[in-house]
Image 1 (cartoon, rainbow, N blue to C red):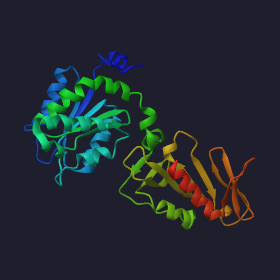
Image 2 (cartoon, rainbow, N blue to C red; image 1 turned 120 degrees about the vertical axis):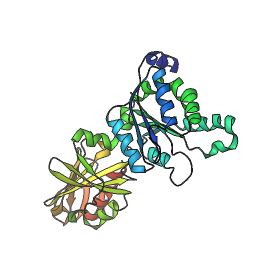
Image 3 (cartoon, rainbow, N blue to C red; image 1 turned 90 degrees about the horizontal axis):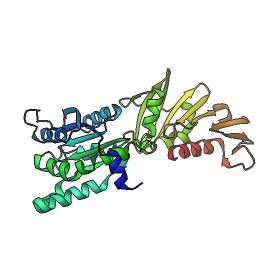
Length: 317
């Protein structure tokens, strides 16, 4: 279907928008940029479902954006914090959440700004993209910049963008969608120990992860390992748990596929039998070497080599 037909389908859609002003000094009384966004969206017959002010802090910004994504808001507009000073962290916060980038937004914004203010346009780091199925744009804080971005770029394509983003579930849910589906609780303020049963090869693989945390679901507690981090929905994330003599590995980024994998500690130490189960594939240990069962076995080496190889493979899929 052409872009023209997509626009016709979305032409009468009322878009639910959240406006976030990023500032450690502004109040709603002097937030002229945020107020302009609210007034203009309302005049265009869209619904401003939420408006707030957050500090110039990466975690605070990400937390507020995630709240709106979880609530099913169509569009999140941020204003402020897109410059190059030490306190301007909005682009870093937003880019860490994006599951699809809209590079053309920033490029066009700076091009249009150049026509108005000349070379100073290069100092703006306006950014846009999708966080799952929510459209997110980060604009500078000045009313003039908000007017340029909203009226010339965002509003003309707003309903079309939301219509396309509504079809982006396969792109954006990622490992964070798995957490919601499982009803799991994520804790980033704790570092869980790697289970002893994981052995040194696996420990080395997991310690290359960019960020760690803990995950609790159904009374079970997992160590969480993100590649490259635990901020992006597109990251590869493993949850690891020792259960007696077994090591359970969940590749959350492959959810809802069958991702549970159990490795027997007894098998690792040299006893024959099932070594690992990954989906429909079974790995067996015979004569000190691990291979996949079936007509075309794949040799993975010794128990420790195989375990490290499998965990590395699961972390990268």
